Length: 510
Image (cartoon, rainbow, N blue to C red; front, side):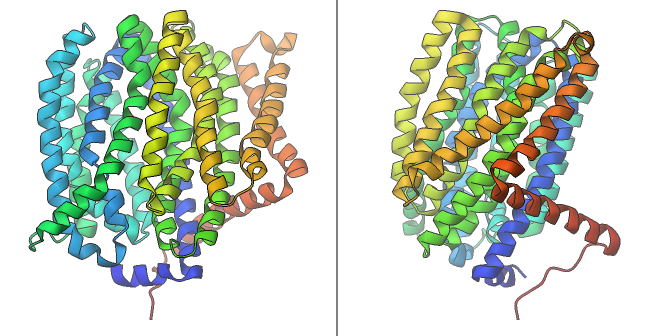
């Protein structure tokens, strides 16, 4: 069945259908995950304190960087070997597992130093709990690549939704039982075991067969550049927490951590799911660079016109929304949510252009962009922290994502033959339409009668903003409106077919 699926996807029309179906399934999963994550964030905000959020945010700086070191880029290299993946599964698996064990030992060794660095003794136990998950997570790496190569995005969407639901439910339950910051850490190794078991059941790799030394050398050699790029990117992802951990209290770090998690969800869920679909599709289009570039540009446009209004709506709802739900308890996080929600959506397109580089095996160029980004990011964040503490960090992080990732995407797409205006349009028009639509909704919520009640403000912002955006898009960019309507119409149509007739068998070649 797997070989048939790959054969089917290899044709131009089969590949297009598979990629489109994958985007639809994972968009549904993203919407479900966004709802689950929103409810979970609200529950955890009631059950935990800003200090709890702050401590786990600092623990994640070690966990995130360690997991970037562990991944090493083996999955990207293996994905390029789709036609001979069975021959490469064994060396890839043993490399991943070995790195996972090394990562766990490294985290356990780093825990006492992190505790002293951040003046937080409780970090030792938290990092140890997270470290256990590191080698377990690597067990699912090779099966995951096989599932992605087969373009079985329905299974991935179903599992991702389950994992998000289980993770959030487990975290809430532990928080209710009084586990504090450990509520975030304990479910992670448990879910890592579950994922490994399910993915092996779905696509067990052949790890018992022998492999040659040259294969190990090739994987490690080809992965080194990807490894370096991912490590730098993960250090950047944790950089604001690292800086804040040195200059601010746990409560302030917690407010920022809460705001960033809230603000980044649309970008990370939607963009992350897009690249899960598009990277294997791009890899199969490697012999047709023109089609590959056009596919990337269409995906960039679709993602930009979805993410930007979502984040802008999030920014204007932050004040009345958090006050309505929590009173004054989390109001200090509102400025962080607003600032970050306006900056982070401009990072979304770079996820796709980065995948385009990976599919073209231009790993060195991706490393160059990452190496330049690190001093730029840390220079801005340190300057912002020294000038304005947590608020300065939030402003400079938003400015970084507002400028550097779009510049990288512009250079990558121009290198592929795309005109500068077609790239700039991905940022300017969604920004202008979203700002106008959500700004008018926010202005309407400030009218004297409405402004007195948080709920009435939320309703006016939501109705006006979400009503004006598609209307303005219809007038100004009818082609994009039609593309979005077609995609969402496909989701609804597929959902209706499944609900009426039940799941349909997957078509196979021959």
